[in-house]
Image 1 (spheres, rainbow, N blue to C red):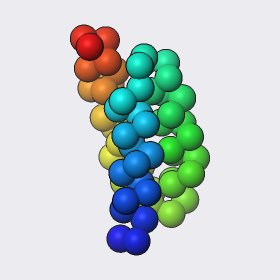
Image 2 (image 1 turned 180 degrees about the vertical axis):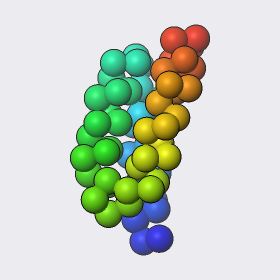
Image 3 (image 1 turned 30 degrees about the vertical axis):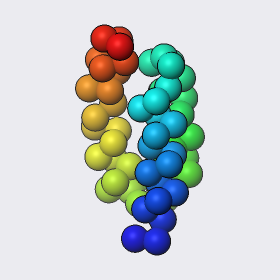
Length: 59
């Protein structure tokens, strides 16, 4: 996919966030930007938000 690199960069902003709250805000921005073009991929990440939140709490 031609947008793969840009999506990966946007995802890095989520999982490198310093807090759960910031990660959720970054995900909202990611979702807003990409969901119309890649709905399945965005939904897949949305399904993983609980796991991401747990990881951010541990770290």
